[in-house]
Amino acid sequence: MSIAKSYLRYRLKAKTRHGVHSPFVYDIVEKVVQAKGARNDAAIENLRKALKKDNRLLEINDLGAGSRNGAGSSRTVSQIARSSATAPAQAAFLQRLATHLKCRNILELGTNLGLTTAYLASASHAERVLSIEGDEALAKMAIENLAKLNVSAEVRCGNFDDLLEPSLRDLKNPDLVYVDGNHRKEPTLRYFDIIAQYARENTLVVLGDIHWSSEMEEAWEVVRNLESVTLTVDMFYLGLVFFRKGRAREHFTLKHP
Image 1 (cartoon, one colour):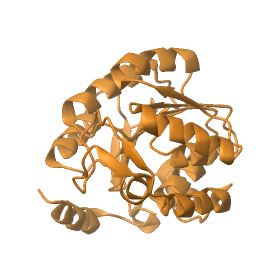
Image 2 (cartoon, one colour):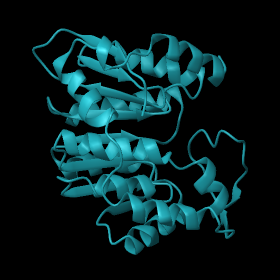
Image 3 (spheres, one colour):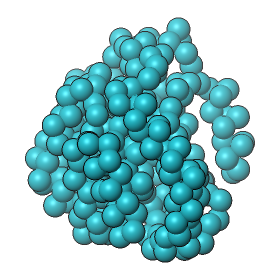
């Protein structure tokens, strides 16, 4: 199914806050989705603008499903900033969500240029932010960008399969895990299974690009139906997954920010 058809199907199902009967989800819509802006957003977006003009060429070793525009292994920083980084509205939403849920320990899979990492690390309650990037050149740039923003976050370079579990052990109690790399069904489900073993009742897992491809839509459907998952929210570009116990299973489709 094409991304356009997926989006049309999503829009037909998506609800505003007036169609939500869960107080918990209604609060997210009212206080996170409907809100605007984010802490440190001016500095981060000024850096994004500069990166979009940066013509330095990077050799990218893409371990995931690649970029949607079909770019090869050689890409300019400008191309990456324009096509691969999480969009500003979605990154700001993630920060507001982390603040709303009082997330202290945050793990990100897929650092890219470090812009979303900076948003997450700027959340009000963030104490420790770890981010894993598979490509050495991107990891190096992300570290430089975070230093420019004076934001505290640790970037680890390597394969997700090697670094995910050790990073979860280091965090001990992950409050938020953002999975934004390797957009394929089997790896996504494998990562989710590992994350779920370390999740607490209030842990939030955010899956990026759940409608990227039919493969990712299949992965999202599997996650939605797992016994351990009690609440999911489809926001098209992002899928929110909760493990909150003692409640009826609910699945929502909300208009994205």
